[in-house]
Image 1 (cartoon, helix red, strand yellow):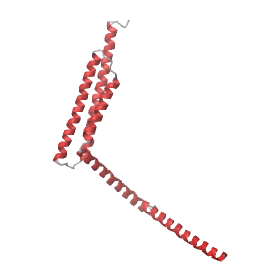
Image 2: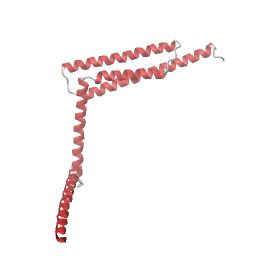
Image 3: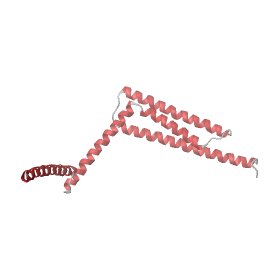
Image 4: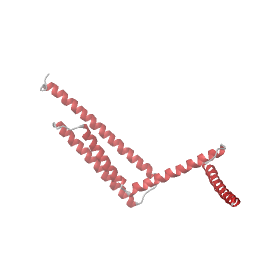
Length: 183
């Protein structure tokens, strides 16, 4: 068969369209998963702390702008699929890049809000509280097991430093006494 065989050209065209459809379906699926994960994380971060009306309005506006970014990306993808169907050379990496750029833009829209900053503050505060609770439990466990805690080790270190200072003072005085005796 030659390159101009209509049957072979049809098969190649069908394979290319199938590959593009698969790539686009994977991209859309990954995009939706990313949006869902982001919104779940955001909702978990807010977790019961209801922001004021202005902050909520700002949040909804930013999410609306982020949604527009996603829809623009979907429209661009649709156009590029049409271009590819029309014979233009469109690489799969271009589709990936469209989604990556739109994801970055959408996240910027949401992450720049007061509500997101407050949610991040709540997450950091919760993590610090958890860290302190973990530290307290580990210290208590070490004490119950008869092992030294960080506090115990700090105390030993402070005592050692004080003993070294005292020793140095005694050595200095001894040197003075020896100097007087030699004179």
